Length: 301
Image (cartoon, rainbow, N blue to C red; front, side, top):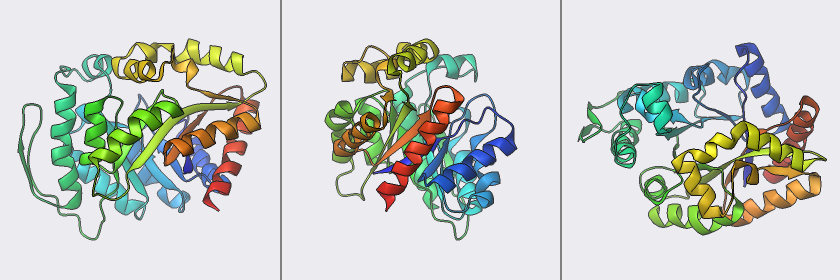
């Protein structure tokens, strides 16, 4: 298993670049970026590539509804060429309040939408011709991007349909707001069963983590700042499946021995990467990043 770091991009671009350079120096396997209300993650990764030439770079995630799959395929291949094959494309449908409130699309048949989207995106990344006339996605054509291998494609998934899709038509899954037991019992079997006969699938688990002497305070902070995530249906499904009350029950919080033990549980569960999001006051964040960087180097040795 390897450890990547989710990059806080709500800062000026030079500071984001510095964070990626620092993550590379510390030994993290990948730097991950989300699509929020600031920098465009794909453009940012292309811009950062030469500054951090060894670390993997990925999106977690690009929202499907906001980009046509042929457009996203062209963008992803351009980024892949710009960073010399170190890019991983993570996609997901997001959530109804965002899709309808921010983008103005109607949230209809999201599972079918992602399935039809992957029917276009996956072959388009390989340079194959596509002709899909679905109920939510229509696309026809072929991209010509010479000498560029397709980036790995990961699908954000929590429920059975998208977990199956992540195994069948992608290179793995990105999941979050869950625990090691649920990863072992629900996520890994669903993805690997669907991927039977294909190369090893990636199981990337996003986690908030903090090296702290006060884990109860850390959990209270997450409950206050991220509690609304527990009301979104896909996240609620993950939490309920794991028997967890809310996002605060998923964080890794404690001393070095407790965090290392928690990481080992995810490795034993079948996770191939932990996507760590450091949280807490600046001093705790620095301790957290240093600890996970050391652990990342030891796991890659």
